[in-house]
Amino acid sequence: MALRSDWLPALAAFESAARHQNFAHAAEELNLTASAVSHHVRKLESRLGVVLFQRHARGVALTVEGRQLADAAGDALTDLDGVLRGLRAARDEHHSVRVTTLHSFAYAWLTPRLPHFQAAHPKIRLRFDTEIALTRFDDGGPDLGIRHGPGHWPGLTAHHLMKEVMFPVAAPNYPGLDRIREAADIARLPLISDLSRQGWHDWFRTAGVHGAKLDDRYSFTDHTDALNATACGLGAALARERIAAPYLASGRLVRLPGPELEGRWDYYVVYPSHKRLRPAAQAFVDWLLAQPQD
Image (cartoon, rainbow, N blue to C red; front, side, top):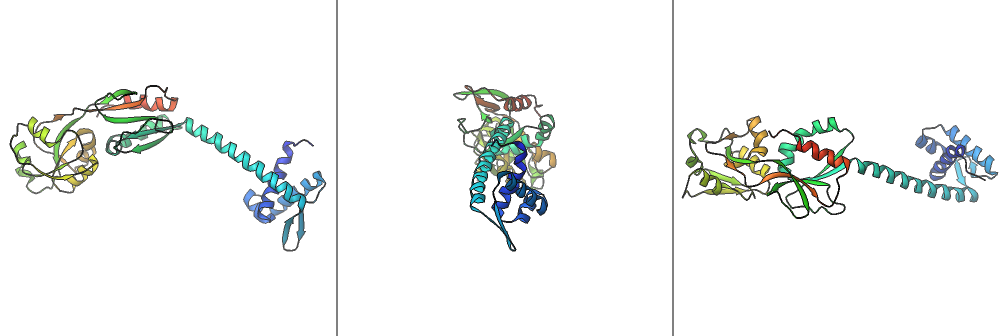
């Protein structure tokens, strides 16, 4: 006996009823009426020429034949569900891009611009890993990354995204801020730093301040944490232009006197040289490189 497509609604109703041992619960699951489920089951029994359920006043119970069919139907639907999930996952994977970047960069520069990318590419799903460690681009890893560094990493293609400069900032209500008139005055403040390879000593050297005893009071792993501490009035921070932009725009931080320090490192978009980017990842790279550097 060939299994025809018109058997499928009856088999679905039977499998649900067998699982719940209740026609009403099956009806609720399938968005049918209990009488419709009963009709499907009776139709199936008629076609097979066997009784699948023993009906009694308190409900229904599977017969031996019903249990045999329920086991087979359950296994078949489980297998089918697995295939469907796999197909959906493959579809989602085709339209997804996994990106690794610094938390500070994602927070201050990237995230505010993502609505524009979403509007241009509504089907693409972005997944972000924000961490300081250099992530491995192996199987199961990210598709691409945005890194702050020298621009050359073994095995990676790197596209220059933007330059970076650094300058001192403080909270606008910091006590005595009106007396900070030149770079040498900043040397007397509690100083806040992060793990950047360039720091206060580099900036004071550029500003021509030598021999000052610096009060390097606080150090944070992430640059946004350093800026948040600065906005809370803990001292002065040497801010990276791209990361500090939203703090300056909102008035949470203000620039202090002194020169800009040009960063030794810039921001780059990177991905494995031996892999061809999938269309979704290439679309994100193209969009990143087309962004205005402001």
